Length: 461
Image (cartoon, rainbow, N blue to C red; front, side, top):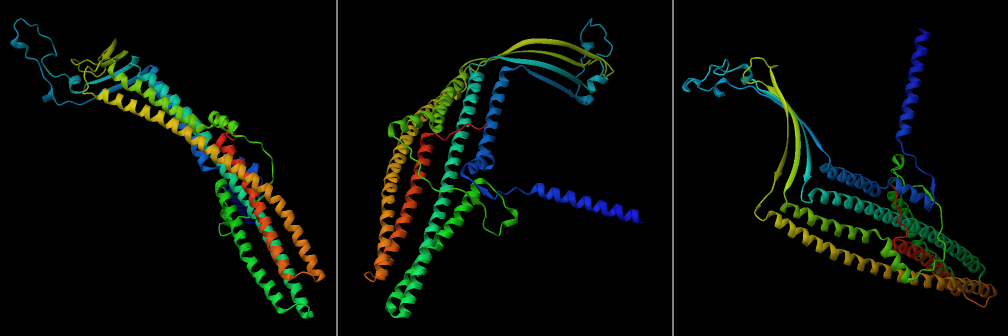
């Protein structure tokens, strides 16, 4: 009895351990912290847009295999068996033909005629299709190249989106720090005003003024804290991270990094040349024009004959025998050709469509090029603006800090007012916020230039 109990206990323990392992294996691993590079690596592995682009590559590879089949011999096996009513079988009336010799089984229905069967194996090969097969294969290769460029575009868009989302988090984190520092200083100002009022050195107005300033500083802090929560959730969505056990909570992943100034000497001519050379959208437009040009050849193949050769070997039952295993077999070879002399203008209509589509694709290419040039100009202009604003704000923060120091010194010495201190504090908070915003804009401007020039595009198979 004890042995059975021990066996039951061991069995239950093993089952529990196995179930625990299955649950642990099923639950995704959630990182505790991520850097920008880790975010990029993770999103390239599991972002749905990137994964769908990879599947599109697989689909276009299948188009090549499908189009190549026209150049490979086709092997076909076929067979049939049927049961036929005797009344549906025509028997020749040989008695009406004079001097016709008597042939056993010819004037009556045989068993094989009631149950005819046949089997055949045939090999066929397309010889000439007027350019249709080669055109379709070329189109398939171009479609595969377009899909590869589309994958590069998706990767570039995803990396750009991740960088922006990451920078947004760092902006909000810095803004939270600035607003918290402001609130803390205003709290100290309020406490100091209360002590001075209790000592009878300042009027009650100073206490009310400090209290109002503190109250006004709290809503901006609440807003940036909310912005930080939402920015984290947006990046988690981009990274396709699932947190099943914490769906009722906000994400606690720490995104490690900070907004930093890294000088990059962009110039407009170089940006233009990089964009025209590397942007996958422009290369896609060029490939699409080539596809429609090739479709003209495919459509024109309707004017040409179609020629193929074949060879087969077949076996069927003898119609005048009584046994199913009485067979007739042999081989046959030949050629087959067809030429649509007049198809009701069907081919002509297809050619007209293909030529119109080619002209549209050529116009799309030029429009895409002009659009890319506009994007480069806009991104470069935003970069210049962000650089100038950042350089201007650096000096502003230094001046605001010095202004607050002087205002506090004057107030402590009794030659200044609390209003001057509060105004200087407000100015410093605004200057720091503007500096952080300018630094964020500068980082985003660099990321945008990377995107519009195609310098972040990487082929990842």
